[in-house]
Image (tube, rainbow, N blue to C red):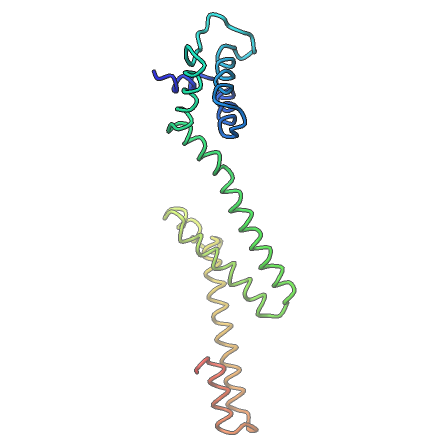
Amino acid sequence: MSKASILRQLNDADLEEIHHRIRRDADGDLEIAKEAERRGQTTDGGRQTPACKFSLGPTDAAKAMVIARYRQGAEYRRWLNAWENRDTDLRKAIETQKQRFTFISELVHNTDKTGLEAVSNGLMARLLTLATEMPDEALMDAAAGQHGWVAKVIRVVQEQGKAERRNTGEKALAVSQDKKLSSEERQKRLKEIFGIP
């Protein structure tokens, strides 16, 4: 066993403390080595156990070299990477919540029909996206019968599509029956209704 790997014999709490001391680089390698030896010769209760031989080397230079080698080793690098990225998921969740809050806040200030439709469409899109990521069995359960949430979302989307087509048809009918409009104005408005350039 290499002297650097002897540090893994420390209990989890002690090894964590040694990792943090190495990370902070506030102490020199020799001071960290002496702290590791002190922690390695105590039991969980903190009592000294003289029979325990936990030594990182015969000389101060050797002890400091063990810490220097451990600092460069894969074990410490894995720990440091995990520690540095420990809150990545939390940061992502906070950013997502912030974006959602901003989106909803803007829609509350803009309470016209298009704002509410945008929220509705956004929520339905999110639900359908979740449905596409579900395992087949869970999706079948969610889509089953009248009460499955996927079936309900699909029904709402279909009903919304029908309502939009009905609304478009009514607008087109009103324009086509408006006797006050010239044929060019009627054609222009019909193109606007149907989104024709």
